[in-house]
Image (cartoon, rainbow, N blue to C red; front, top):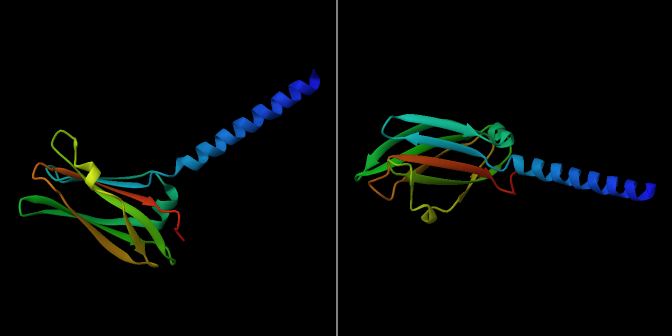
Length: 143
């Protein structure tokens, strides 16, 4: 009976440890989000992934209108000497906060060479768009 308790204790401990490892692995998958409100000129940067936040800085956000559609320009800079690979996507939202055609905006790959800077640009696909959200996430090939 003592052996059975030990086996249960070991199995429970192993399951608990596996759960903690699983949670730890999921903690930093979100990335960086840059929200822009084109009506109020407000910009919010939210970083959920500390590793990514140390690798890429958001250095500037500007927006304008082209042919009656909102356009956003977000400048990113690598803080690393080596190559950094990320995926990014820009989504657009109406005045009620509803995403406009979210299925048509897939993630795109972006490679930043050491200490490089780049500006990503997105144009809304509807005149109803009043805000945008840039999502940046690490790819599995980041160096």
